[in-house]
Structure formats: C-alpha cells, structure tokens
Amino acid sequence: MTSDVIVNVENVSMRFLQASEKITTFKEYVIKRIKRKITYTEFWALSDVSFQVRSGEIFGVLGLNGAGKSTLLKILSGVLVPTTGNVEIHGNIAPLIELGAGFDPELTARENIFLNGATLGFGRKEMNAKFDEIVAFSELEEFLDVPIKNFSSGMYARLGFSIAISVNPEILIIDEVLSVGDFMFQQKCENKIKDMIDNGATVILVSHSIEQVRSLCSKGIVLERGRVVKSGNIDELCDFYYERYR
Amino acid sequence: MKKNDGVLDIWKYRELLWLLVVKDIKVKYKRSIVGVLWSLLNPLFTMLILTVVFKELFRFSIENFAAYVISGQVIFSFFFESTSLAMTSIYTSGQLIKKVYVPKPIFPVSKILYSMVNTLYSIVAVVLVCLFTGVTITISILASLLTIFYLMVFCIGVGLILCSIAVFLRDVEHIYGVLLTAWMYATPIIYPAEIMPDRFLFVLYCNPLFYFVSHFREGLLYHQFPSIELNLYCLIYSFIALICGIYIFNKRKNQFVLYI
Image 1 (cartoon, rainbow over the protein chains, first blue to last red):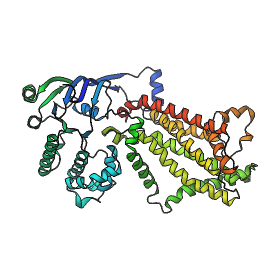
Image 2 (cartoon, rainbow over the protein chains, first blue to last red; image 1 turned 120 degrees about the horizontal axis):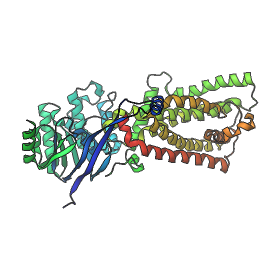
Image 3 (cartoon, chains in turn purple, blue; image 1 turned 180 degrees about the vertical axis):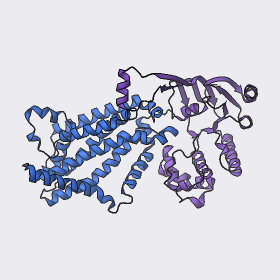
Image 4 (cartoon, each protein chain N blue to C red; image 1 turned 30 degrees about the horizontal axis):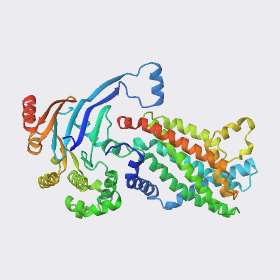
C-alpha cells in the first residue's frame, strides 16, 4: 500500500559548509583564494534519513537538541533544499513551525491576515472567505486594527495558528507550538487538531516531550545526530527514547 | 505538490507579489508632504540642473534639450533604481526566506515592479516638460510605453543576476555602484549620440541601454514608431538578460538561505 503515502522522505542528507572564516565580500574572497586559505568544515545535520508518512497518520519525530529536527522540518516545509535525497509531498502543507513568521509588525492584525495568507499562496478573495473564521478562532476581534507590534507573544501565536489552520491543510507540521498560548487556547488548539485528524489530516509532530508524542502519535522516528536511530510504533519508540536518554 | 520556485509558483503567490509592491510604494510616500509628487519633482529638478549645466555651459546643439535630457534620464533611473534595489532584495528579505517557503524570484521582481510604478509617474513629468517646451505629444508615445515593458524584462534579468551574486559577496554592491557611474556616461543621456568619436562607437553599440533610450525617444520626441531593427535589439537584449538571470538564479537559489 504505497498509494496513500502522503510524505515520502528518501535518503535525505543535509550538509552545511562552514567556512573556517566567514567570507562575505569579493575582496576577501579573492585574497583568501589566492592565499588558498578557504577551508570548509563540513557538518552533516542530517544523514540518510528516510521515512514515510501515510495519509491520516500522526507521525512523531523525537530527538534531543541538535539531533536535526529543525533541519528536517525546514526541509519538509521547503525552506531548505536537501543536499542529497528526495522529498515528495502530496498535498497542501501548513508548517506551524514559526507561527507568524511572515508577519509584518508595523501592520495591523487585519492586514497581517492577508499578508500571511499571501505568503502561504492564497489570494485576497480566498482570505476574505476565511477571514471571519480566522478572527473567531483567534479570539482577537477587539484587536483587529491594532498593529501587531503591540501584541503579546501569546496573541501573536494565536493569530499565526488560526491563519495556518484556516487554509485546510492536508498536512500539518507542528513544532511544539502547542506549548504557546495559555492553557485554554492550548486545549482549543489540541481539539482543533484532533478535529482535523478526524477529518483525515496528516500530522508531523516534532517534540522532545515524550508525553505529548505518546498521547498524540501513532508512529514515528527517533533522530540522533542527524540519523534515524529507531523508527516504528510509538510506544516502542517512546520506551526506547526514555531508556536511552534518561 | 513540488516546491520549485517555477513560474507557476510565482503565479500562485501573485498576491504576495502585489502586497510587496504596494508596501514599498506606501513606505516611500508615507510621511512626505508632497507624497506621490516626489516621483514627478525628482526628475524635473535633475533635468533643470542638467539643462542649465549642459545647455548653457557646454552648448550642445540638441533640439528640445530639456525633453531630450529628461527622457534619457527617466530611462536610466528606472534601470539604476530597479536593479540596485533588486540586488539587495534577497538578503534584506532574509527573515522571511529563512522561516517560510516563498518563491524567491518574488523579491527581486517586486522591486522591479515597484520601480516601474515610480517610472510611470515620472513619465508624467516627461510629458509635462514636452508640453512646456513645445514638443507635441502624438499617438506614437505608445511606443514609449513599449520601451518600459522591454526595459522591465531587461531589468528583471539583470536584477536576478545581481541578487544571486550579492547574497554571497556583499561588496558587489559597491562594485556595481562604480559600474553604474561608468555606464551612465556611456549612455547618451545628456549628450547626443553623434558626438561619440568613431573609435568609441562600439561602446554605444554594445550598450543595451543605448537601444532602450533611443527606442524611448523615437516615439516620444520624434513622433515615429521605432524601426523594426531597434525593436529587435531591445527584444533580444531583454530576453538574453532574462534567460541568463533565470539560469544563474536557479543555479544559486538553494544556497541563498545558508548565506543570509
């Protein structure tokens, strides 16, 4: 059954080249080149990572800081392009990685809804249709015409989350955003995500919280220094992770 | 869905392109008393200075010198402003590029379009100068709008090349600044093309801006549709620039995010 594979990650590796000294100008480049002083240290943030996520699955990615989780997410969301390997994604993807990443602090919440929609590839008409839903979910009716530089980080995240889920994504990428906002709103987000899952959405959840992953996910992988050290059923995975790092 | 920065992708993100252009325009005219008028006044003042200097001091024998200068200058400013802005557009948009996926050509292209809007305003100034100095405006001015289109394509190409380099080597900015000064003097903006000595004629002939400026003046000042030959030159330069731009940009774009 490969037909319902919605995210297919094949032998993905990501290499970062770190110049021993950062070269940013042409002058430096020429001088160093002549002196043969340009040396790079390679750093593989991900090596040979493969996994598949099926439609409707909630897929957990566990790993300590520096294991390559963020790099993997950036590759999935299209910000980074892997050095080698392939990523296939069949469907609309909503990365809830940095909520409100496309916001302009000088603009009001109302304007930012359209701007953020545009950075997701949606036009004014489409955003108009979703506008009320976004405002209602974010509970920010009173602050619509306030420049969002005056927003608290919680309000920021609420608006970002509301926009991201309003576009009916088939795949959600979540990077511990559930820990932002107050308790009530967290509950609301979790319920909303569960709703979307019931309606067939696929979720990739990245976390280092075992409890969160265990309660939500069905399958997953554990990353360590850019490699997949274990994959499979979530209970096994969590036990393994717990054993390994406690 | 594959994310590939292709043309279709830009079309999907056209709303973002539009918002970026509108935002730049708003920023430019915010908190300035005369607002939009700046795009008119700027070329007018420069034209006045140049006219005084070159007509009175150097005594160039060009008919309608004021209109001649301002028309050349508007074309060169479009090129100057749009490519300079496009050059820095990738790394000034770093915050966005690092966090969300957006087709990256959007950034340089938005700067070119913003600059084109300014240029269209400036053309109003050009027309005003023509009317005041007795150059009649005929239907052939439509050909001058065609010039703006050719030049836009050319600027997008050059902008794509410049921003691909500037991400990696920031001092390209300064090098380009010097180059632009030379380029300005190699283009007949304030002097007539005829005074170019024969042994330097090749400078004009391999300068794409020479063709754009000539094309622009044909319809505006000389009331005739530019020759097919001139149109072909403009078209060929535009598309060569565009193709090179797309090629270089595509080769480099995956690295951008690592350097901003």
